[in-house]
Image 1 (spheres, rainbow, N blue to C red):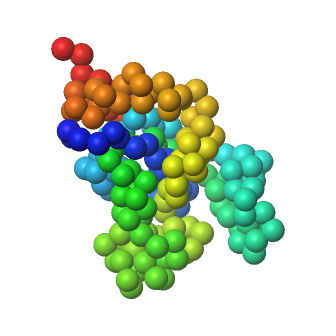
Image 2: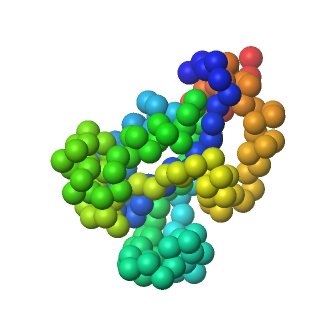
Image 3: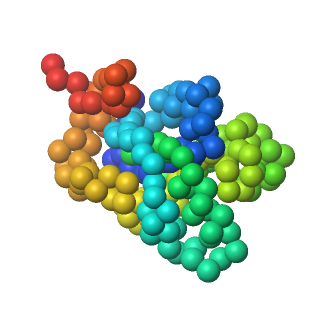
Length: 175
């Protein structure tokens, strides 16, 4: 993937409902692979406190407790994805948050195909550059977006990458 503009980073999360189904998980990974450069990937399980911290901005809303319980109910997978306009592209691929709406207005989206309910809607994605930075650092505290943009982004942008099947991420191709 060769790009003209600087690459943008976004966070993508495969939620526990999709992780519970290996065929859905593989389909989601393939869709991501077809559309993005995968910079980092991590499988994890949250404690309730992690979920409460991540979704703190929704505290007090009617769905908060249900969301917190669900997100700490099983494994999930987090990705750092890159491409031009990564945030918008991932959000478009996900489709509407409300699964009923996704099924009827955007059935080809990830939530339209695989979502179960508004909470169990398969995926999460950052909604802005600021939230992408915050969310990436929450899931990947060891990752420095600034350092990556300075040292690695030019190589990725120019297509000097290869996909590592074992780690399921893209790396800079060393020639």
